[in-house]
Image (tube, rainbow, N blue to C red; front, top):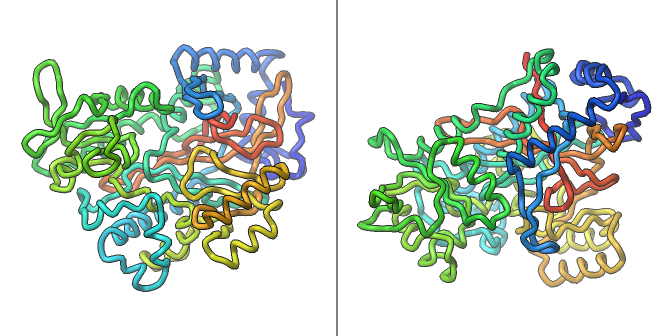
Length: 477
C-alpha cells in the first residue's frame, strides 16, 4: 500500500500539506509504511485488532443498543505531532487547568468572579453540575481537578482549539496506553527509527497524584478505585488502571463508613482507605447527601470527606467547570485568575441563555452544531448541516423550552489523518484528548487519545457514536 492516490480534499491533513507533500514529522513514517510488501500493512492491522480483542479492550454502548459491549476500534496509522506543536498544547493545558481549579475553588467559597460580574450568577446556580453541598469544602492541598481530559481539535487553519473540558470522571486514557502497547508490537521498526515520547509511566504518575492527596503524616496511603461495576461503559478502564497502579478496585458495597473513617471490607477485616479515585458521578457518591436512591456509592462518605479524613479524586463539584455554557467563559476565567491571555483558544460559542445569541442560533441553526450543556459522549448533539428537517424542528423546540441548556458552535473543518480502508488510505477527521494530572505539579501526558471518525464525512469521533482511535506520537527532540 502507498499514498500515491491519497487526497487531502481541501482539509488540513496532518500527514500531507495542501500540495500533497509529506509534512516533516510524517515523512519517515510514510516511507516505512510504503516499504512494506503488498498486504503486509493490512495483516498488521488485523493483528492489532486481534491483540486488542484478546486483551479485552472494550467499551459499552447505551441507548440505541442498550448494554452492547464492543471492541474499541483502532487504526494503526499513528497520529503525529511535532515537539513544537506539543509544547504549545502542553503550555495551554497547564494554564487552563490552573485557572479552572482556581475558578472551582472560588465558586464554592467567596464567588469573587460572580461579584466582579465576570460570570452571571444565574449561569452558575442553574448549572446541573453545581453542587450546593460543596460550598465551603476544602479539598486536600486545595486541588479540585486531579485528573482532566480536555478535548482539542485542529481547524482548517492548522490551529488548535479547545472543544470542551472534562473534569468529572474523564475516560479514555486506558485506550491510549493500550494503543501504544499494541502499536509497538505491530510496527516495531518504526519505533526504532523515530524518537517518540513515552507514555508508559502514566500509571506511576497517576498513583503519585492520588497519594499526594493523603495527609502528610501517612507514609503509605491506601488508594482504591471506586467503580459503578461491570455494566458501566468504562469498566474496562477502571479495572485496567487499578491493576496498573497495583491498588484495589472496589464498588460502593465494598466500602463502609465507621467511626468517622472509610474502610474497605476484606477477608482479613476492615482496612482504612485514605484516597478514593472515584469513577462515579457526584449524584451517586453518597445517598445521604446526593441521590437518595443511589446504590452505587457509600452512605456517609461525604461527611468523612468534608472532615478531611478521606480524599476524593476528582473532588465532588468539579463538574461545574464541565458545563458547556460555562466553557464559553473560560477565556475570561483565565484572564481573571491568572492575568494572562489564553494560550489555547476556545471554539467560538453562542450561549442560548442570552436572548440575542439564542436568536442568532435559531436564525442560523442549519450552519451550526448544537450541544446540550450537560451531556457528554456525543449524545444530544445536532450537526446543523447534516440534520434532517425533523431534527432541526425538534432542536428548536428544545432550545425554546430550555435555552440555558444549549450552546451552539460553528461547524469546524476538523483536521484529518489517514486511515486504512480495505486496500488503500483515506482521510478521516480526528480530535485529541490529552490527559492532565494535578498533584504536586500539573503534568500533561505526552500525546493522549486521538479519536477518529471512522465513517466517511462524519465529524463525530465519540466511540459511542461510531468513532475509533489512533495512537498519538509526540516526536522527541
